[in-house]
Image: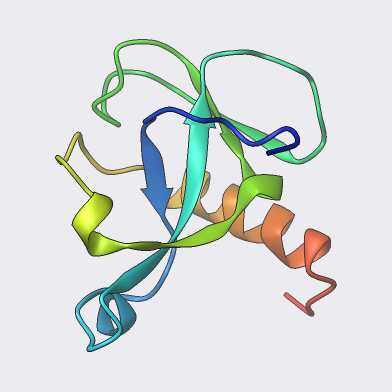
Length: 98
């Protein structure tokens, strides 16, 4: 609906471990895209260490809660610096003090 994507894509799980393993069965995630749009809400994620085969962009404006049942695999981990960049953008979008 609208501009939401209708297919599977890699995500970055940004919720705390205690939520990820809690009774809700949900995680908070930011989808990734390979398309560079130069939007201030997109954070570049380098390939390689992250487990991605090419540069991707975290579409922080698409932050959402998803069921752990939808998770189909693990690719890798992001650097703390990349996670902090995503957190800063999320805080700005949600008008949170960060």
